[in-house]
Image 1: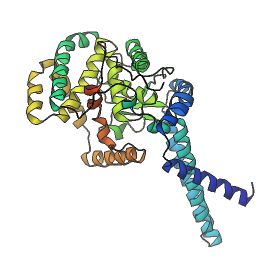
Image 2: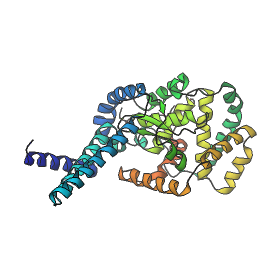
Image 3: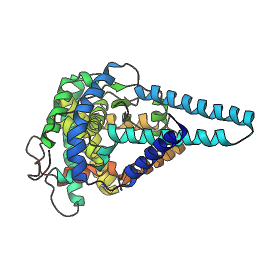
Length: 363
């Protein structure tokens, strides 16, 4: 490829990436063309393949990316010393910027466009008006009652070490997706260990998906009763629900439609969410109502989060993620995690935790 043709290609790639970063795509177009069109069959293929690979593909990609950047920069420095001009550095920077643009476009086409799909409020029937604090506390009371009632049986049945092998959780995942969309259900992913495990421990991150390999990476320290909900949450991302509150919502529904053990995991998650939203007085009432078993489990989770945590890194890490979410048009940033309570409190449900879908909702 000649120099001018390469320059044209680079300009086109960088320009396209810039346009895609700022263009206000219509959510209904993204929903039809990508989230319920191109993405579902793509996800089925990519996740099924990544499940077969025993190592985290993200680890391989990160090592390759770091090696590539170092090679390009080292080569540029050597060339600068040889020719005594800055041209090689400029060329290296041009290559890196073009590569970053390509990575961003791949991110969008493999998964990232899901951030711009129709919101859950366009998918399920929600009551109007602001969330009543009394309704949140009422949900908290139900959460405590469920934890107290399910604890003994959940611990007696136990939890399968690999959520991907938990048939009840997989069925719940399919059921939750069918309740929200007519599109072919997404393939669940295996929870993989990663070289970023220590970072997860230091910052209190439970898991994430690799948008380039559509695989699930998890904190190696997760307790058995945490794994079902963490898996369900990350699977929801694989299903195209990029917003954190929506992934929490779908993950909670997945657990509710599974076994007693998975339901218990879902209610544990919800207890943390409610506790962070109600005032101190209501929080105290909920805590006093907990039976000894659920209290021990919640204390175990709190201990896990404190063990090995680096507060300064946790703050920085979550600030970076907050900016990442906002850059992908999630205006609430990390506050979107807690917005799941709005969905649960305001959504209309059938008796089996099946949300009532809006009649005009798209597939």
